[in-house]
Amino acid sequence: MLLEVVMTVLMVFAVMCTLYWLAVAFQVRRTARLLPSARDGIAIAEQDPPTQRVCVIVPCHNEAGNIATLIASLKEQDYDRLRVVLALDRCSDDTAGVARRAIGDDARFEIIEITECPDDWAGKVHAAHTGYHRSEHARNADVLIFTDADTQMDPACVRACIAIMRHRGLDFFSLLSTLNSETWFERFVQPITAFELARQYPLLRVNRGDERQRAFANGQFMMFDAGVYRQIGGHESVRDAILEDIAFARRIMYQKHRGGLLMADRMLNCRMYDSWPEYTRGWKRIYTESANREIKRLRRYALRVPVVTAMLPAMSLLLVVVALFTGPDTIPLAIGLLAVASWLLGLSMVYRMSHAPLRDLPMSLLGAFLTGRIFWEAARDLSQGTPTTWGGRSYVRKAEG
Image (cartoon, rainbow, N blue to C red):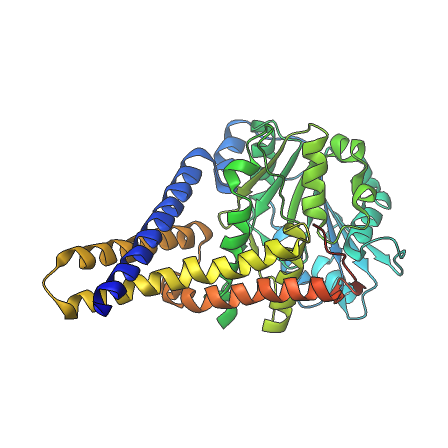
C-alpha cells in the first residue's frame, strides 16, 4: 500500500516535470524560429550597408582589468563611421592608464574623466550622461550605443546591430550577451540564473510591440536612435535608477516608441563577475529590480526555481529507479523516462541558445538551488532594508507591493 502511494506521488511529479519542460522546449524553439539573433544582422548589413554616424559610450568605474579587452574589440570593428567615448567615473585604480595604452594613437577614442557624482544620481547613469554631454562626437551621432566595460564585441557587432535596428524599424535595441563560462559558478549556476531572468521576460513578449509587450533591456548593450534618446530625456530621465536598462525600456514602451531585444549569439560576450560574492551581490540587485522590488514575488521565485529545475527532475529519476526494481508494470517506468527526457530536452535547448556548455547540464540541479538562494536573499535584504553597493555607491531600496 505504501509503495503504491509513493509511486502515485512520484508519477504526479513526473507528469508535472514533463508538462513544464516540454513547454520550455516549445517556447525556446518558437523563439528561435520567429526572432533573429544579432548574427543575422551581418547578412542584412551586406544587402543594405548602414551609413549612420555611431558613438559608443562606455561608463567605467575601476575597470582596469577589463577595459583593454573592450577597447581592442572596438578597434577591430568593421564599421568606419564609429567614435568611442570612455566615461571614467571616479576611478581609484589605473583604468585611465590602461585605457590610454590600449587606445594608442587611435583618434576615434576619447577619454572623459569624472571626479564626482551628485547624490540624486546613480553612478553608472551619471557617467553615461556625462559622457554623452561632454563629447561632441556623441552629441552629433545618429546612433548611440551604451555598453559596459566588461563586454567584448565581435568585429561585425556594430554594423550588424545597426542593420537589424533599421531593418526592424526600432528606436531602441538591446542584446542579451553571451556569458562566458570560466569559474565554477559561471558553469554550474549562471545558465539557470540567466534563464530565470529570461523566463520572467520572454523574448517574444519583449518584442511584441503591442499592449501585451513586456518592457526589458540589457544594460550591457543599449542602442538608441539619437533623436529618440534626446526626446525621452536621455539618462537624466532615469537618473536614480539602479537598473537603468529596464527603466529605459519602460520609457520607450510608455512613450510609444519601438524597442527590441535579441540574443547576441556570440556577437557580444561578457564576463559579469569575478567571484561568487560579487556574483550573488550583482544578481540580487538584478532580481530585485526586475521583480519591481516585490518581496512576495522574489520569495515565490525562490521556491519555484529549485522545484521545477531540480526537484521535479530528481523525483522523475527516482520514479525510474523505483519502477525498475519493483515490478513488471511499465507505465510508471515510461512516465518517469518521458519526464527525464523532457527535462533533458528543454534544458539542453536553453543551454544551446545561451551557448552554455552542455557537459555542465547535470550540475543545473545545484545551480537551481543556488539560484533559489539568491532570490531568497534578495527578498531578505529588501525586507530588512539592507543597502546594495553598485558602481562605487550604496543604495537603500524600498520594498514595493
